[in-house]
Image (cartoon, rainbow, N blue to C red; front, side):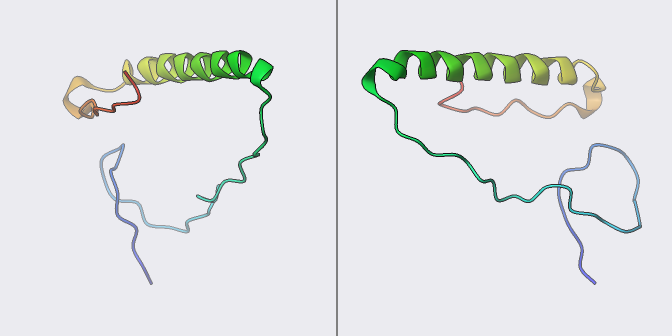
Length: 78
């Protein structure tokens, strides 16, 4: 038997079968960009970051004030 430790999002203890829904190892496609593709790819990245920030902000609105996690500082996220 083993236990998994982490940050809980709900109160209490859960006992039961655990299932792996997603592996931590991701198969990330890798490809080379031509110089003329760089601007479009950077725009795609910036758009993805904005979408994720909006989704996380919306999720954060549903957290009780007393249980909200501290905002992490990230040099690449500013």
